[in-house]
Length: 312
Image 1 (tube, rainbow, N blue to C red):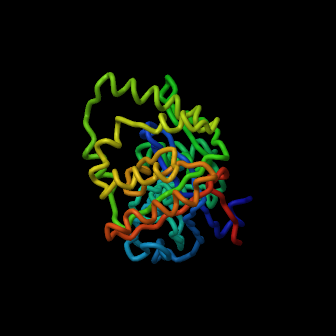
Image 2 (cartoon, rainbow, N blue to C red):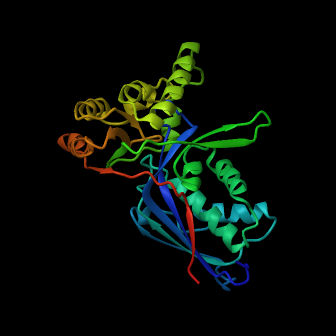
């Protein structure tokens, strides 16, 4: 569409769960839970940035020009050596903030795609992806948020980003439990060591390889083994109240395993279609018995990724 006729766009971006056990900073999955970023061009040069937020945690989201979605919007125009036009931005939040479900990735991808559409779509999808990774600092959330599905992202010998889709067996159901306390990515990264032993590196390499095959085939014995990790989870578990109890109960209820979603504190259980209801009810009850509110839900895999709708 010609950029002169494009006035308002709405970008819908899925939540994501990253790492999935041994896939630290390189593996992520898009889920059917969405944030939306709508941007309307205005002629208000006196107030070039007007931001409105509604939904979960709306009162905690910055509505100035330092808002992450707007910063990403501006970043794309800077990449084009252009000045951002005056806009009104409306953000609808359904993905909980600072819970390990990729809320920042939705803001980054939403802002970039809105800017690209309003600029006349000068950047290809992979160029937008590169900008998203540069803003986020790692690819595991922003890539599936943009592309959908389960994505493994790495670099070429020329240090260019390269991503491939990981087939996800339809009999594997993601179930998340979201406790009512926050854990920032920065805090979760501070507890990680600077160096790892050779045996731990080999362990994670082998288990990530097994996980890729397990996700494709749905083999229960492979999944139960593959979700083990020695790079981030052993260090972050202490930041999540009652993590061990939640994991033990989830597995007893029939889950293949339980991992930290992103940096946490949300946890992700992978289970068969036969055990979904039992696992979901169990995850929702463990924290409750400890006086901590938590929401559990079974989420479908989003295979579409971020979508753009022209409003007018």
